[in-house]
Length: 337
Image (cartoon, rainbow, N blue to C red; front, top):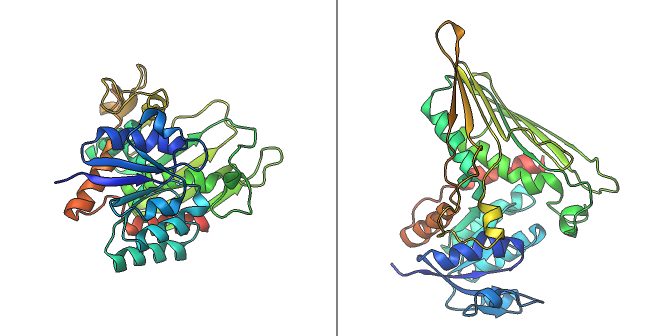
């Protein structure tokens, strides 16, 4: 089957790191065009790619089949609606939208136009999360009792991206920035919770938006899942802590892909997606007579290319995209609560 002719709506950090390197190395895609309103940086690395001045020029390009909407979050609804209405498939970065009503409208439009709306939840393809999924699926922990997922950062200064830091914009703050990652991983593993409680807080000087959030999700069989992110953690805790009736698993957030891509490494380069030494996951099983058996599990290889492969099979073969409409609807419901 022929490659999918693809356009990228922006060439900022996400375009440069998370999209262009895959569009240019995955033979299932043809990276045709990008939108750059000011500086034309894409041409320095991709001289054959067209650089449009306006979103409208990209959307109206008749050859482009797929548009990646990687613009600021407050534009996601408007630009995705425009791309779908123009007969383009869309790969949309998180958050999908600010409200559940907007998400429903976008998926309804996707159905009415016959074009696929796909959410770019790349953290499903992190090395650590892939390991977490394997350990849980293996049953080695017994029945799960308690699960903790975290994103810890220390960034006390107000960031330069106004749409994330000003509450006059929809879908602002840390909850809408990192919440989609943690919620998506949880929904992918456990489905919709029976109930949830959301707590947010603001701690940074002069901050107008939340810089801390905590979700407590409850599931059948008394499973409790806790999701936490903060911009004021000087010493990060493990990203994944899972306790079951016969064991525990602990793993840090050591996925290397973003840092490697930022330095110019390509997904096809040797060593891409490999975590640094010392990043093993720690599995502790309680054996006979309550004797601990500890095993260090080697890290998996991270693979963001997995989501682009899913896009290809969805567009070309009408395969079910792994991030489902139901999961995104649940996610936004919890984000906007």
